[in-house]
Length: 492
Image 1 (tube, rainbow, N blue to C red):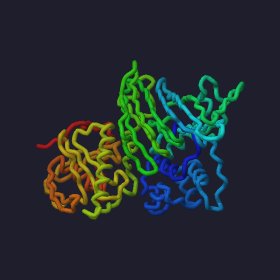
Image 2: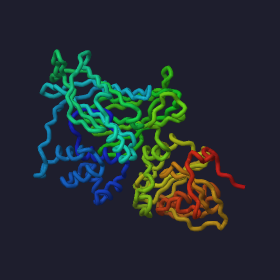
Image 3: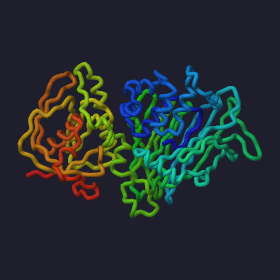
Image 4: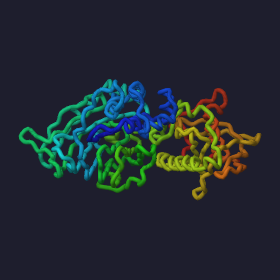
């Protein structure tokens, strides 16, 4: 969700990466929708391939991008005779010295204030500045979001937009007006004067608007569309809601990853404040902050109505959800040691995902995550034991070689459908064959709770979810009815 951004249109590659992440798809997932090879998606997002007009239109439809992908493709195409003329950029030479966003929640509404210090390093006067306002109430459920905004579209009246250049009010004209997406040109003029930004000059602009919690999803994104020296974000939430915040970033050269530095938490009166900043961010990078309120919204006055479900929170943290094809098939093993570097990269991504997920939930039994849950079709998983100082168990090309006849049946949860818990029978002891990065084969025995955790993750590598392990006629229960959160499994 891009709450606000200004400058010339981004490349097709950047837009494709953005909309794929907004819709919660892996590269493989998008490739399946477009019926193309996943490697071609990688080439498109890296800018090595441009794609055809037909592919661009199909991608726009599949990702429900509202024409943004098709427009970006037109703006960067140089060869196709079917491409329509692209609008010439109007902000060439514009440099953002300071980019500050301050988002506050209160009385059931979010209020965003943007401040930018601009400098014209070009050769022509600048007379307008592009602002984007987009909302996505259910970022992991695009059909649900689309239905919401069709019934109750975002309106200019409710935005209550105000804009200033220094102390002068700025006029504005509408460029695009859709149900959940607005674009406008802020004009360097008011009803009584004009104040263009001439070459070599600097100017501070501010603008602010409001969106109700019914239409604002639990995340805020900043996209770097102009050369920027300093970018910062401040989020202010009522302390009584017990907010937690985490962040991710994407760029043309890197996929979805945690922010390189964590948001800093402080207090101010009855608010909890989260701040994050970066210097010289790369062009086309996108930084997304997400939040969750631990307190029960139904018991808090003026609480937002957009607290995500357990499964949606996991989806927002980058966990692929049930129904994705990658979760239903056996993954590809590594050729070790030849693919040791690739295996190490996947392990890093898994451990980074563990950190994100731990911000959202207390795991009283240990936890694990497998590569297909990040949309990665490789045989890798990590299991985090319950003991606080224990090292993660890394499983590459893992298979269960031996399982005890003795079993027990206990509740399990899965990050890929975290809204429920299910009773699953599993052996009390297993022997697992797995590989080291050097290609050596290792045999490890796991018992009781670790046997359950490891067996669960190896099932993911085989395309099996725990629902398939449950006894016939036994169904999962809603997580709200489960009473074992934060406690260990019990063994005699």
